[in-house]
Amino acid sequence: MPSDPLAILLAAAFTSGCASIHALRHHAEALTFVLALLVYALASAVVSLLAARFALLMAPDHAGGWIPVAFGGG
Image 1: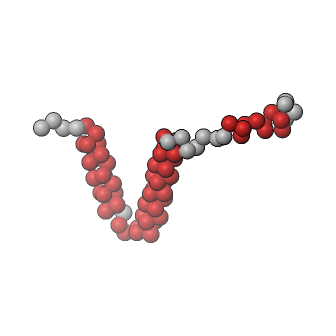
Image 2: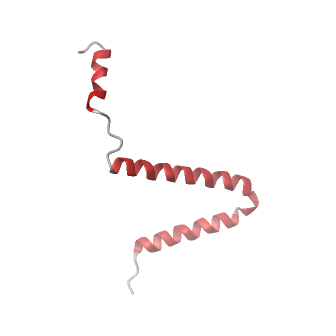
Image 3: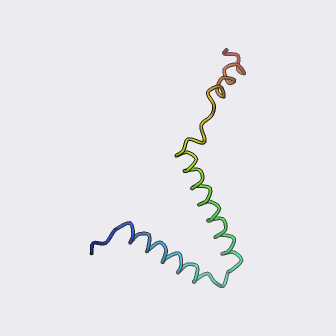
């Protein structure tokens, strides 16, 4: 059975995350805050990547036209 390097890397990352949570169990308040920030950052990154992937972040064509007008170029 060939081993997948990505699967091994993900398993190692998960195991190290579990070990660090276990090691910091005496600092539950700080750990909860840090994990909540991590979840928020990951969710923001996933939403941003999905929005970019499906072209939901594109500005309308006329949006850039006000800049030259505002600075006297048009």
